[in-house]
Amino acid sequence: MSQTYQFVQDFRKIVEHFELREDGLYYKKEKRELLLKWSAFSFVRLRYFPGRIKTNQYECLIKVNNGMNLRISSVTFEGFGNFKDQVDDYAEFVRALIERIWKENPETEIQFGHFASRFTFGLISQLLIFGTLGWGVFTLPIGGASV
Image (cartoon, rainbow, N blue to C red; front, side, top):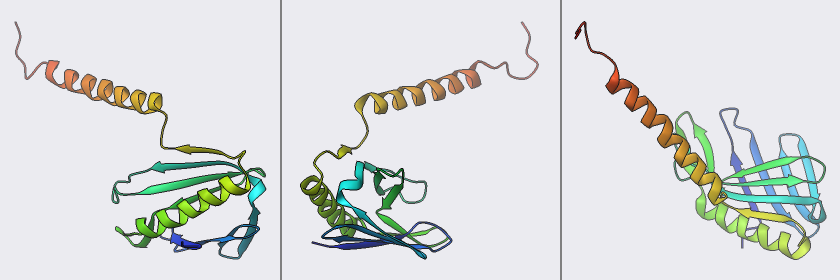
């Protein structure tokens, strides 16, 4: 099992490093280093999060009791329009992370994906928006035709 994972989020090329340790999750970003104790986790959410350029993207969102939020992405930025897919390493690390959180802090709320109602609402909203736009385009008068 992979005990470390890192990725670059954007053009600033700042590496975010995560490491599973006995006493918590070690996090490093530039000069900021933290060791988040397993008891400090309050919420974890795993989701599929496709982007415009990279559609096979997954995220792990973490909330800690002190108000801090972390985001672990399955893709890493390599250059403009160039993202490397690390889904295999990401999946292995996140599985180990979730197992460790469940073992050390079972009170942590863990969600997988979106709620069905949220997904359905988003789909219906998109259909209504595009349907209204399509109806508006086809009902506009063309040219100077008059009856």
